[in-house]
Amino acid sequence: MRKAGLPNARIQTYDAVSKNEVLIDLDVRETSENALDQGKGQIISALESNSEPGKQDLNNASSLTIENYLLEKDRFGPGLRQISGMPLRLRRLQIIALKLG
Image (cartoon, rainbow, N blue to C red; front, side):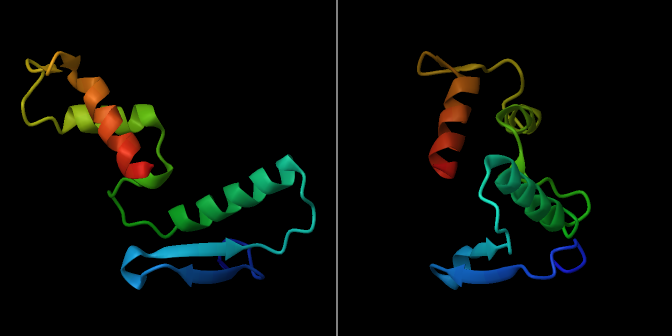
C-alpha cells in the first residue's frame, strides 16, 4: 500500500484465514461519494499493481469480461448454447452471481 501512495492504510483480516478476507481502512476524513470512490480506486490500483502477470483479476472484472472469459474457456464449443431450455450464457451468469453473491 505504501508503494501505491497509501502510507496510512491499515489492513485488518477477518473471517477464516483461508478465505483471505481483509478490510482496508484509509485515512479519509471526507465522506462524500466522490472521496469514497477515489479511495476505492486507489485500493484497487494498489492491489492490481501486485497481481501475477497473465492472471486475470475476476474480482474486479465487469460481468461482460467474465462472460467473455467463460465463453472463451467453454469446453463444449460454440455449438452447445442451451441447457434445460435456458441459454448457456444466462446459466453461467447465474452461477457467477451466486458465487459472487
